[in-house]
Image 1 (cartoon, helix red, strand yellow):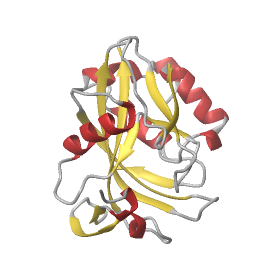
Image 2 (cartoon, helix red, strand yellow):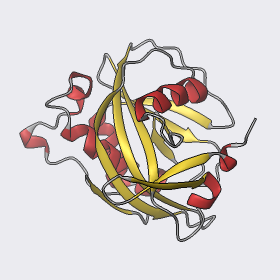
Image 3 (tube, one colour):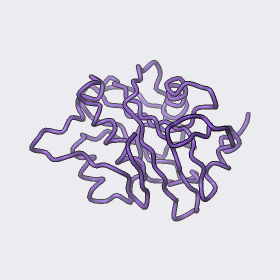
Length: 209
């Protein structure tokens, strides 16, 4: 079996058009190469968001909290198919209907390892039962927890270095989709509650596409 760092990712331009491919390791070596990725946001029937703590062995942003799972489709593979496969591998979740919410383009350098995330990140959203059993792969996921959206936003604002640099932007993309995706409806921000966080944190920069 080919290790994850040796697997191939799809390189893209700023509009998301494929331009070639390279290995995961090459894509994340400074200064980083823009490539296609996905981030899964899972919400349960109580409106809570699943977050995972990335495993200590990760080469990028280890032990930081992030969304339910992330990954890279193989060149030519559909984002939804790749995301569904990754959910099974990382946390043992199967047969979730995933819906595209939008794209978050960002770049962030890990201050500990010097590795770079430069991703055209497709955000997909799914809803699961509140009592969903999870089976995490300890080589990928150190811990998991469910948080109410307002608690997650407050934590991101108050202690951003605990979180991955893409999570705030991914959450903002999913929140923007709350009016058109039933699966994301619980993320809607009441008018009196202020705007959802935009962009990335912890030394990253990005934009929604």
